[in-house]
Length: 308
Ligand code: MTE
Image (spheres, protein in one colour):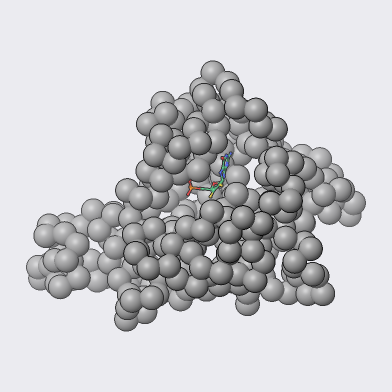
């Protein structure tokens, strides 16, 4: 049973079917899928998600909320994935503003309330492939970055988008480490305008927790996870390719493009397989993380080995 297309944003009808299924399951008692996950009659959001992700072996299954929120890369808090959640639990995300400026006709400074009211939020289920060789399938909540870019109206000279994230030494113990803070990322403007490039405000139908980048982050599903910068405070439209945190830290290991690519090994390990969190066997890594149809055209004629 294939419940969602691995290449697609969850369509509205699917979302409705899922609700319908849950209603039926709750009314007539738990079916086999429900019984396997949870004996209760009223499914929790986590259980709902497991039902959505129920597929035949080898296909995409939603990663449980517990794993998504307890196995995190967020160096501003800690280098240890398991330490990020406890160290970030009191992270202050209110008030919060995002400044969108630079080579634009209509710069904006938006509060979270502005963002949530101006941009309709939708559920988007995407694979996240970390450059370290693990992956998850995450039901984000958010909207296309292109919608935000439409509002600020990029000027003709704007060729790239630079993302800057919060660096607050009072709250973030990891900032003591010698790295080029603040964490910065970048996309070419046409990449940023692709509908898959997403501004995320939640996951599993809940607000984003601190360890996953509260209150607002970027998600670029066809690129290695480090491009998906957490806790955004600035989005700047620029003319030149911006510096990025990992490219500055280790340029021979982490490129600006960072497209998921099984054919381009990292200097210290292969990238042709990955470990999906929750699975024992490794599975093949897909070019552009499986989103080639949507984004392949952005790289026509480019050598992806030199532009890694
Ligand atoms: N954003 C910031 N600000 N700081 C970070 O250390 N780590 C990146 C990315 N965004 C990181 C960040 C990396 S390496 C990955 S794999 C993803 O966040 C992990 O996102 P997750 O913890 O929500 O799975």
